[in-house]
Image 1 (tube, rainbow, N blue to C red):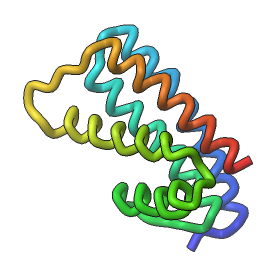
Image 2 (image 1 turned 45 degrees about the vertical axis):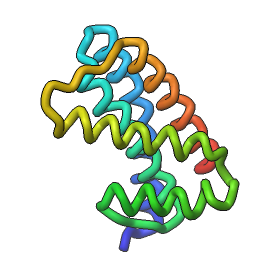
Image 3 (image 1 turned 90 degrees about the horizontal axis):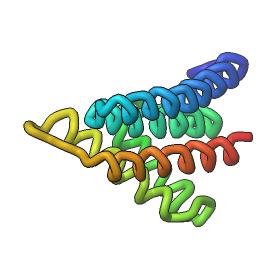
Image 4 (image 1 turned 90 degrees about the vertical axis):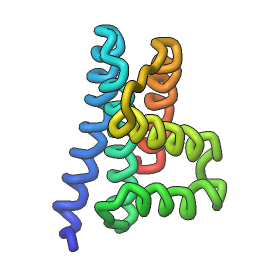
Length: 130
């Protein structure tokens, strides 16, 4: 169990990590490193979601459990627009495809859209935390 002071610091750390990942993903897209950018796009959202979970005293190291918790607590209850659940699910699926499948290619336009969605997702999560 994480102490409250440590929890607050960790929430801030994870949010900062999420926003820094936006810049990293932009750099990767600009330099045509699209598969790696897709990975970072998902992880930026994951860091923000981890911050939200910590703020709400939910802890897990499993991505599926974290996504399930978010869907149950925020999407199903309409605290968050369902589009954010779809954005997260698509990012997770694309990251998995990019990390584990062979000969994966993403189009620049497609990754630019993912990057924009990532920024919106992180902003939405920040609003829930602040």
